[in-house]
Image (cartoon, one colour):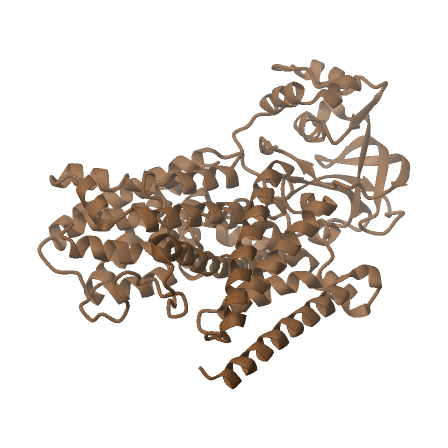
Length: 267
Length: 346
């Protein structure tokens, strides 16, 4: 009986891995840099399935099923529950439970800028590259404002620019900021504000942190609706928020998280 | 076994397979929210976040568990306690220092380690050296170093804090043991497990005549599922804590310089997660708990946890196990508090 339970565990694990890898929804759970490791694990599971199948065929031939003792029944139940869920990324319902950019890291914004500039050709080619090296505040503002007067936060530069803006609020006060994110309400926020938020992930969804801008007013859409918002950065009692200039709904992106391989800076 | 019984078992097996497939299809149907079942929508809304965090920890940790099991399987096939005994120097201090580094070439997981250490002691390896070996091998090894560096990718210092701390603490335990237990026997003489494996696995059905390699593969299979069980429990508890435990309470508990260390040590004890996977669970507490508490979790769990304790008790005298647990607990707690006292942040 142990062999049959093991085989079922392996089949279900293989199924889960295959489903996530083949649909790309694996990125709802882990940083894509782990995907090669996950693929290797999937190959190992397939090999183990073959071993277990051989054992099962032998058991069928001999008619000796063995005992239940040592069968991983708990693991089977746990892995079978995964069938009850459709893959989904973290959304607004976890906003209150996830820290807001609280990852403690020795990484400086400057280091992130260097890494971002070195590794991010997308941002560079779109003319809104983050300048390499140690930027002074003026350069940071200038670099961030390359696309006209609007500071645009893209997937490629979101973490760097978000950090710059929150570190130098006064420099950015009154600037127009554009970003995409999902609408959320934090349980501790006043009712006249809502959030446009993103999750930043270093390793996996378990370490996700919230990067968000508060927006003044009543949310025009339901929580978890993805929007592109352009707003003027204002400060109230030391806390920044956006005064909406323009907002449009967007399709939920295939890859909703921001991935931060080098970690997140402390603000 | 008579032919009627055999035929009956075959039908039983076929029935179980069919039932399993039917259950899976049913679960999958209800699990697909695209079908619009009220039940599936409710499940997704209530437990969707738990599932997301749970499965993310499992997916991330699994490659390292596999790596650990493969290493352990190879060692099971090709390494022997005699080989380890020959490597350890005879002199006390060099012996203790070297014993603490043997995990680099013998990365056994803690599950299979207790019977090996028992064998080492039976073969004449002095208790202090065996203790250092027991405490360091599940932590001071390349697989755990790699897993920890992946889990704490943005906080590479955690690898040093974990492996360095474990090594130093184990050496201290070894030196204390030299004075306290050197001349006394620590072996528990009642042979309730086979000496070759006291890890609590059931080998009754695995004892097929498959040779040394086949036996090692079977041991690896058993170990894989055993570790998987503890990983599932750990990942589920971590996910439930993240989703349902008040963030404010968690921050309050985790920020206390001494209390947070104790809480994480208790958690490490009960979760009993394999050292190749526990870093991924620990990382989920990084933002709530102090660095010392995380370090204590990562050092204490592989040295002393619930499943380990049962194995230790099966192999060694109760008084020795009590001594070991007490010394390790005090030292790891002190280490965690010391890190917090220094104000180390990652």
